[in-house]
Image 1 (cartoon, one colour):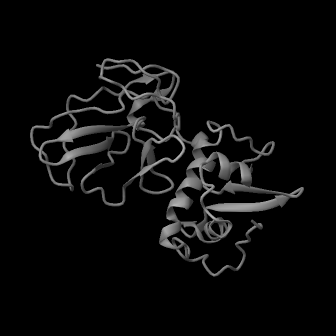
Image 2: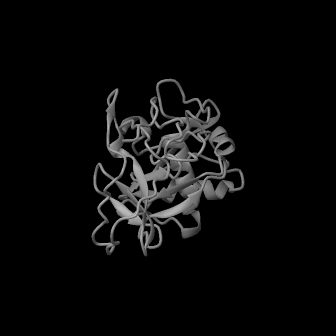
Image 3: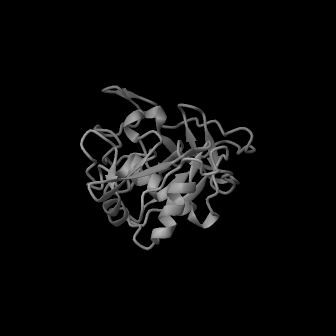
Length: 235
């Protein structure tokens, strides 16, 4: 693959560029690896930068089934709010790639309370007003970590499962998730929910921190690893 330039490419004013629909999955995979999973996958950036060797990103991120032309198109046309999501450059005969958006290091580290929380609200409401999450695990602060940034799963009678995040009040029903969509990670086999480059989370963690080896909790009382460094606390 050759380095891709974005200068005068004709897409600078487009919200999502000219990326074909079938390449959205590749764009998501690249963003997830470069912005959130690189360290956990063992990828080493060029010293003092966020540039990674292109070949290593493709091999380690489980993207070898995509063609060179697919990658060139994604780097050229994938956009977020009209801005390129990725950049490439050639250094000493090697191709490097980086994500231009924010990385996980820039977002709060959170304490994971529950991978899946089952709760029965008294009456499910419409999608315009979220069911009040009474009886949920209480948000706690421990070593500066705030559990209110975690996505938590509930069961709403007549509406199935829904996800809610206390920090901003955002929520969605799985059955009518709107812009949210559920995907499977080809490397770990685990699932994640994706809305856009700024909002997504691992289903088993409730946050974007990609610790693929963390087991699912068998029950609310079982201790398991967290998105941060501490164990979960139920109140």
